[in-house]
Image 1 (cartoon, one colour):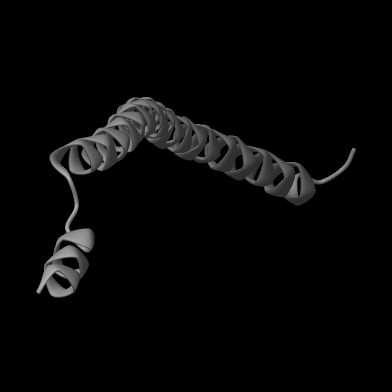
Image 2: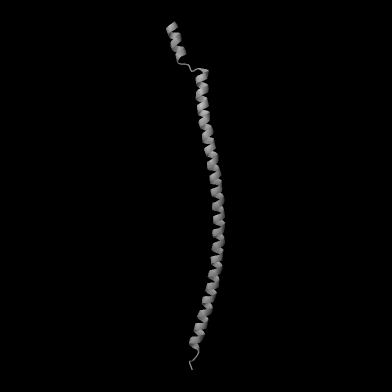
Length: 91
């Protein structure tokens, strides 16, 4: 009977052992939580920068469209002037 009782009790974890294991796990969780907060902060900054860059790119595209329109207008004027010069009889 004593042999059976000692074998059964030998497989049980003590409160101290469980607390020690939980403390180890909790410290690892705290470390991961800190890393996660750092990553969240970094990703938030990256998102803000990406949104700002997208806005700037959109503004640049609008400016390019405006400049293209102006260049097309100037090109048209030059073509018209060249055509007028070619139509005029030379002296």
